[in-house]
Length: 605
Image (tube, rainbow, N blue to C red):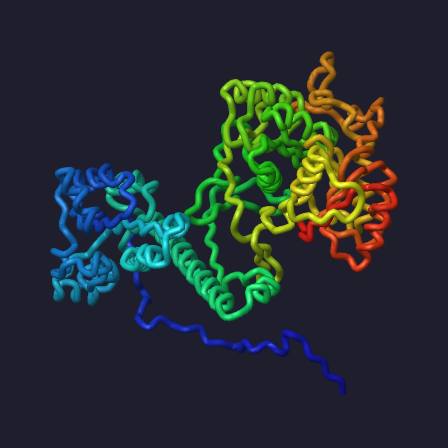
């Protein structure tokens, strides 16, 4: 008899676990629909909207119990407020660390009013029920982001606030809990209408649990990071510095918790049969997810991912005015303007590949001007993202009813990237072009003559641009602009061939010609042209000749480099590190091609 073993047969999970039962009886309990708000507990760090809320509660005859500075703010407005120490019979102590952690508060929140014995106990203890809890928490994440020292961050870990929030959320059959000033108008309306409905209280409870979960995740992730940092510091103190550096980057934290809040449902995901929504990191603002849309139809899933790639690419060149045009997460073109002219940068970026730019996303790290807007207008574009738009630019582009205009704050470049894999995730530091090899002063001249200032500037531009291209990536550039992009190939030879082919077959038309020639009407719903129209009659520009090339990883053989040499590329920057580096260097030397090695790789998958 044969036997086999599978992962499922080796599972340590029991197959027939008993479902735990509640330790208190819950059968037959009926939750009331509306619960009138007679008593509210308010304790908030963020005082936004506090006084209008307090006035609404006072006008409805609600007793307000409050703490510390919240109570002082309410009292200063001339409203009646009961200090929490009058409820607890115990003073605030330990520099405010203990205010509400008392049975007189939590019994009033947690009593299950569907149970007569709970109500009897409240009466015996002299505790008055609390119907509404309004709490927001200490600004822990803001404190961490400010660079505050360890003890200051610890002091901003809220204890009493999350305890009240969770207690109220658990007892949502009787208690409403609010954690955001954005809900205060809902509170005022509910009080006028006789209290929140049961469905409303459940919704608030779900929000509250999500709020404290995200808060706890932020604290635990930060604390885990501190432990890792302490371990690295200890290793540095106890070992040779070179040995520590050779061991590679520090290990990410042992625990990473991330909370996401849904901002909006999307029509569908990458494809129409996939459900999708856009979320923001809990407590965060800004970024592509938090962008302010000035005009156009609703963003799609693919719009968000392409815009994120475009915005990231637009900020890869420091303070240089930069424009990136992206399609399917790969750049159609990237360019900078030495004169600081965003319209010039857009012309150069678009000229790299006007065919693929059709239906693409445009992002810049500066203000969209009217001149740039006039260039964009004839081209079918999905999204234009920028930190600001001139009023005239918005007016020009708003003629295109579907074109999405997004105000996007300067992105946070540092941090971690998380990619889900089955059963978990892989997490890495974001690649922000800050490795030692990204500084051209550290590059090694391996072949050919040393670059002059202009040639070196193009090499630096190409190197910083290739980070945005999916691997295997080879990018050709000239005069601060990409001229050919070979992306996403499974071998580097094909990436080189693609970069050369695209450099020498695209880009024959200038901005606007991809849409109309002055006598044509704009094509499509929002302008643009078919690829055949763009290529018809185009003269091959041979832009690879005299360009520079950047490769995101080493050349494993000289064959890929030879494709570039044969096309007339005059300088190459690449990481090096292949066992056949000398073969590649010799090919460059024989052709008189300048080659620099960076020692740093920029894979992107």
